[in-house]
Length: 228
Image 1 (cartoon, helix red, strand yellow):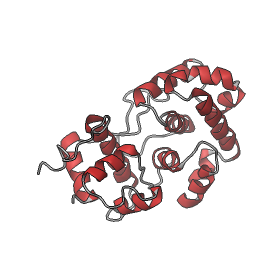
Image 2: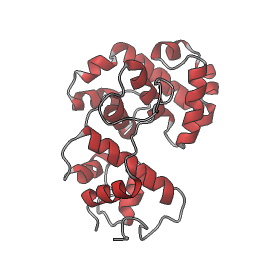
Image 3: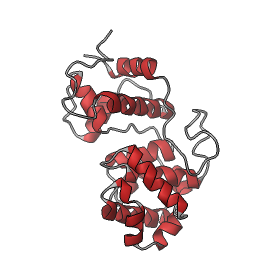
Image 4: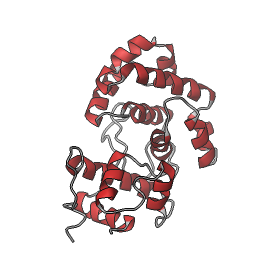
């Protein structure tokens, strides 16, 4: 069985650096991280990541980009504006991301939360404390919380998504049906808790998943990771 460390290095060699999380509407110039810790550089960029992490639930990023573009066009890329926008109007704006009524409520929920616990306050906490608070917000599950922690707040929390489970299941990893937290721990056990590494590994798994694990039947022999 391929180890997580081997998987990381093979994917990095095959796909090169991905530079996630993509930022398009609160930055100038390239939309991706440069891995020097300069993004997100302000609360607007952090909030774009939060919105994206919620909107990408159960849908493709291409649909999220359309919704983000609509939010940006209407000046709704900040929690104050979202909180003031009626939910039906917000739902129509993010319709391309699917589950729009539900996600509009989730955006209202996180906006209300950030009004009480802004990014600077979250950043000053221990990572586990910040995670517990995020998980109390309706609509923020473990995967979404870890996206926010890893990319918006730069805490070293590894993100487990459906692609990650599918890829490691094809490799015979024993914990793919375990709980979210247990599976995450089994993946990161051999890695130092480094934000940049966790960001890159997650992004590489997404790239690989989009290429080979988007539609059934998923490969039983991974075409990249078992080619060596």
